[in-house]
Length: 265
Image (cartoon, rainbow, N blue to C red; front, side, top):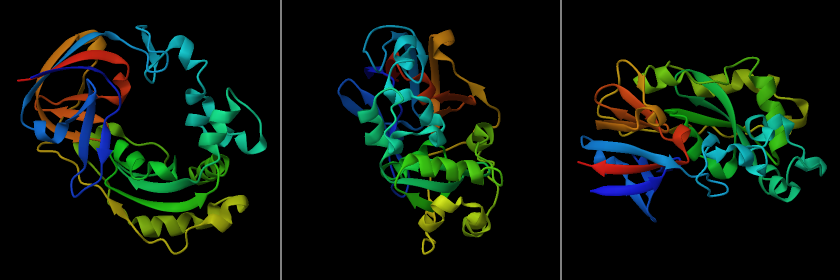
């Protein structure tokens, strides 16, 4: 069975086991059903996810020109504290920025390799946690805009990590931690502007179980742009990674905008 696709990050659904779907040829391929099957990826070229042109991908699925013009990849995406839509100040496209920044945002703790603090729009929970390969997560504050979430994250990351060790996450080397206890430790460090948004009554921990038959013991990353063709037996899916029997891992999200042929053997 063969599919043509322009790679985009896998869509997910939180059930007893996280379900993964890949956008292919106006359809969705359920990847959970492909565990223990041989899959071949063949690199065919590029297609910018913004302008749709067959131009070399620069970052995040965008060509060079779109990456530096599109409002969807402004600096405030990676650094929420730089958000200015709440002040009516435009970065690249104020209407777009207001549509994203002026929505409820969550600052959270997630456990993927270690405990980390992060920010996401409320509508992106639990998608954001799954994309990071978190096994557990808990909300800290819910604020009305991205700026408040950003300054809260900046304050808290002086006391807890804001990065995940992706290698440990993929090997399932996850530290043990009480997220409720960790959240309480951080409460006093929340900026004054966001203190009233602390979710005092939220003790709910969300757990994620991933479809993995075997975790890699060593990590070999697949760069389709260099390899052009790769074939391997799928043994698991975690975060935005496909895990193969030979310890090869493929970061689908890092390959957005790549045109590929996927062959299920």
